[in-house]
Image (cartoon, rainbow, N blue to C red; front, side):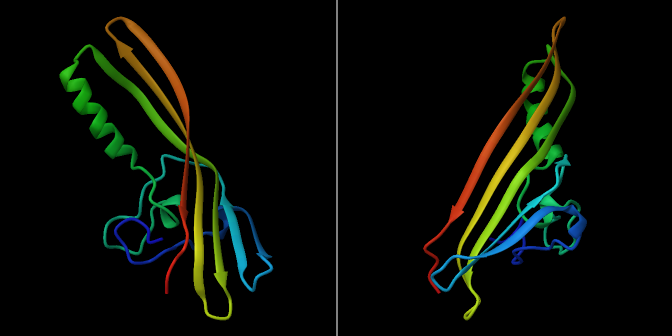
Length: 147
């Protein structure tokens, strides 16, 4: 799956960012490569039309940009000036990337991304201060690829 605004599927060169990796024989002539990246806060997508990732998760997938999220939040706070965002962060953790492929033909059979995002926000609404967090689970499954 190409990363953000690119024809390339993976630009990861910082192998210290890898938590673990393995390759398994699936048993039908295909292999499954799996790896997980170490936790990363406020990671950014690779800039449009470049091959230079600015974050490890951005080298493998299309993470949400912190600034693009804050831009959307600003649209809300403009409509409701009683809301102030004091702090916002998001961290990608326990993300697992899998690829099943045929080593004889180098054709990919399936790609799976299991992504976990921790979201933290600190807001002020009129005189009340609100701190909250959420965890988002997002799975992307690509299969039945025709060559």
